[in-house]
Length: 260
Image 1: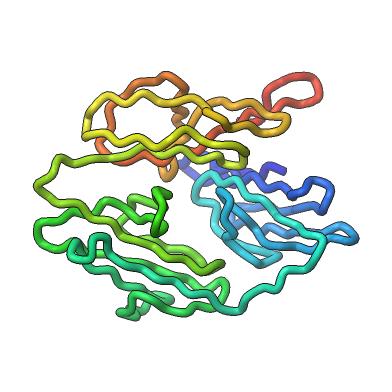
Image 2 (image 1 turned 135 degrees about the vertical axis):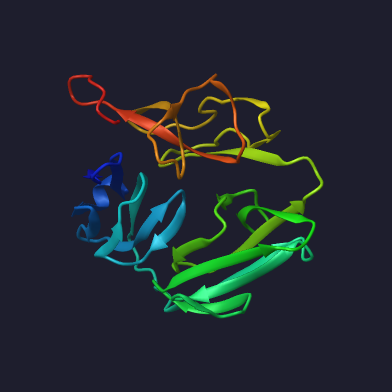
């Protein structure tokens, strides 16, 4: 199902939520303050809401503010999953001398780099670069999965995570990256690429990505305040890292595009 939350003076935020597998249950929801509900069919159990392959909530109903486009999947299983009551969030600078990382709990500064949170509890990670270093983004440790370029990373605890604030030397040429995400599709996205500020960057196609009954249309910049779509082969110059989410175009029964 597609849910549209409209903000006065802003672009629409589209929340796309579907069950997985399709025959395992159904989802409902509406409103600017979105509330999603998952209903398992007989013989199935709700296993949580997932985004980009990761569980983001165990709750049903689950409420949040629709601030940007999201593609969410309600996962169902044939055997019940034991929901944890607590998860561990660990944060560290990389390299260790590049800066300082602190965890904030419900607006209060913990001052720790590893804390246990209740499921659904709000987590904020803050960073500060040391002299001679500059912040380069939040990543899941051991991967190139860039979570955000924002100085502060905030989210509701849904799974244990090991997160890095990565720093680079301030006197080095400033390097950025473009990272591609499936956004509900399956398969292998194009590999990440690094580039210097204002160096020409050519946007890749879908690579090995696909989505049943939908066609790849282009890429949307995650966190952008506009709805600009970057198409395969587009060449541009950028002064920040890009996290690109695939845009999928569905068809109705008469062959008309209706997914945008």
